[in-house]
Every structure is written in C-alpha cells, then in structure tokens.
Image (cartoon, rainbow, N blue to C red):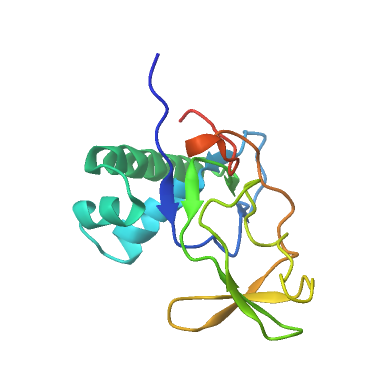
Length: 169
C-alpha cells in the first residue's frame, strides 16, 4: 500500500472553483485538486524552477513533479475534451491566514492548519464576532473573503486535520 502524501502548502484559494465549456458534454467533470492548481501557478505563472516550487509547497521535488504532471494532464484533458473543470479537495495547508474585520478593524492570524480544517470563510472575528472580513496578503492588500464558497470536501490531511477531499489521481 502506498504511503499517504504529506500536505502541500498553498498561498491562496482561487477566486473561481468551476469552469464550464461553451457547449456542455455528457462527460464527467475533471477534478483538479488545490495543490495541483498551486503547482501550475508556481511553475507556469510565477515561473519558478521546480526546486523552488517544491520548497514553496513544502514537498519534495519528485512529489512536486508528480503533482504538476497530474495537473497538466487533467487541464489538457478537460480543454481538449470539452469537459468541466472543478477545483476542489486535495492534501494541502493554507499559508497566509491573516484577516481584517470589516466591522471593528481588528487584524488577526489563524494557524495554517487550524482545528476543524477552517478555511477562512467560516471564521468569525475573535473581537466582535463579525463574519465580515477581508484576507490580508503579505503586501497588506485586502481581498474579499467569505460567502462565495458553496462547500469544501472533507477528507484526510497531515496530522488528522480535515481540509480537502482526498482523491487518488
């Protein structure tokens, strides 16, 4: 039996989790896991070499290569086959977990793998209890957070935390 892969670290969730072809087909949608999308972002958009990509995600270079190859195969298959792409699940931890309350202005940080696998959209301000918040990136820029996600899969992750749906690629 293969051992379970450790969680990859991702910087952020994408703003869109579903892509549909212009003409709907009867084929099953292609599921791209969060760490697969992060591998594409780091390699193909950020332009990092594989060693730097792997270091950023906290995984080995060989594991990064397997994740990237799987991601490229899935995206190419969906594009050429006119299949829907759904981004969900995987074995990952969120890196940047700094929030600012839009009601009281308090800034706070959540642990990368907080108890219960909380992604951010369901976390209330520890000061006033408001659910109105923005995520603050490393440069101090704010992005919308909360309300837009329909659901996240449940499954295993490092240390027994629940984050994304664990699927075999």
